[in-house]
Image (cartoon, rainbow, N blue to C red; front, side, top):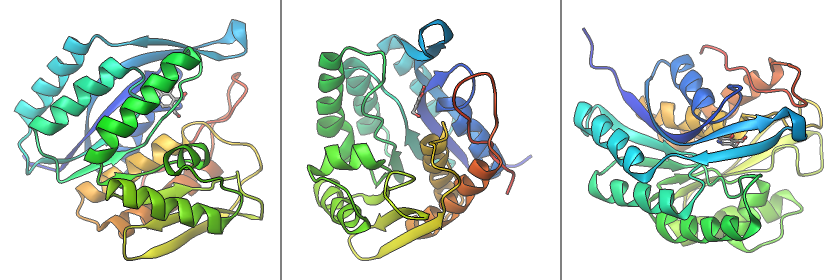
Length: 268
Ligand code: PXL
């Protein structure tokens, strides 16, 4: 019998398995961390409509019930790190923010999934505003992609210098360690991400693997950070390990009948 570290993901289901809670759990497992899930929503792509997102939120009470069960089963030593992925509605955001205020976590890793395709633009704006106001202040580690970094910082990002300025700004707003992802969006041969925690700025680079984004990369990166923090890494060590982990999974991507490849997590 062991009492191994447990990590929690508060995330949506993406039915084909490429992103969301499914990618998070595979990432935890590949990093030797036991995973728990509080499911926030269910996304079913629509193959009849260009693989757009069909989105159904989980009832707020059911989200609370899941979090109650998880935090009763695992105390603050055993479960000290949580990841937050797609929340999707202002109601879900309020529910999750309330739960995080009641039960302390040593680390809260926020993948600030801002827009869910398939939602009304109006609803998405409410969701963005609520996420920034209620969840960002609770985060200790944030992993915005190019679009999310522009939205959270209010800066335009065309270069690595811009991405660094955005990471600094997001740290100032949130107090969190920031891993701002340029990915394939910035020009150049490398996929560059910027780590900034108020003291250290470090560029994490890897050669780009093609010029087309792979689904599940954002979820996998943030989940790998979460797993490494649960194992005791510092935020910078976790960021470096997560970058290597997601790069390996992109190289070994899974193809399917869907119009995008997905990250395939490799055991570490
Ligand atoms: O990659 C963002 C993301 C997160 N969570 C869920 C998703 C997606 C994208 O499809 O479906 C549940």
